[in-house]
Figure 1 (cartoon, rainbow, N blue to C red):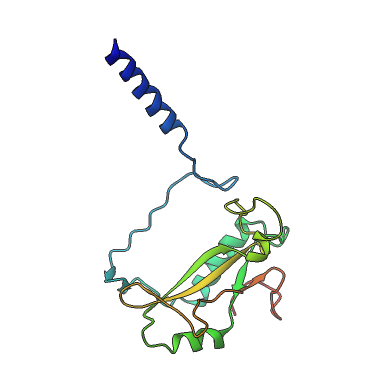
Figure 2: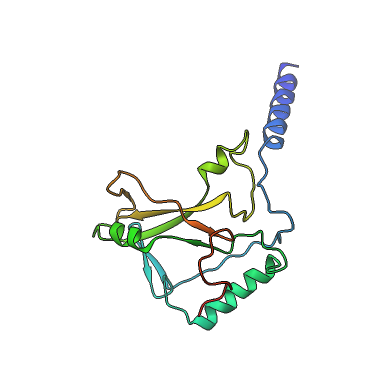
Amino acid sequence: MKAAILFGTLALATTLLTSCQPEAVKAPGADATHVTTPNPSVTHSNARITGNGYSQSISLEEGNQMIASYLQSVNYPYQDTALRALSFDADTLRAYLADPSITTMKFYFGHQLSYLNSGTNLTGKYIGMKPGALTIIAVGLNDAGAVVRNKSNGVYEHAMPCPYVCGVQTDAYLH
């Protein structure tokens, strides 16, 4: 009898634990297909990513093809509410990259602090590609994978979103 009660309690606990796992937040209308892009020419040396398939130059035509596909997917120019680009000050990046210990740059997506502070319960909420809420954080890493802090003991943010701040160029393609 005690074994049956113990087994029943264990089964109930297991059921509750597995059914209470948070589900991944998925973009509305996003394709559920998992895409894996293997690249055998990319290797890792400690924390540094190297190889022929990493950070390579592409032609303007290839870049425009990739941009055009994305813009079509967000219904641009008929809907101009999705993020098209994030601009970063080149002098800021040059000064940061003057530190010779930086061997890799990572650009993380994040929610802007102004967005997070504009209401309650916004942390962790899906925002899609909302220009006033999404940003990138530029982080330099050394060969061991440790964050290299800037002269202010931090990293960089404040990328300008397009739409909203698109510069003098009116279209979204490379020239």
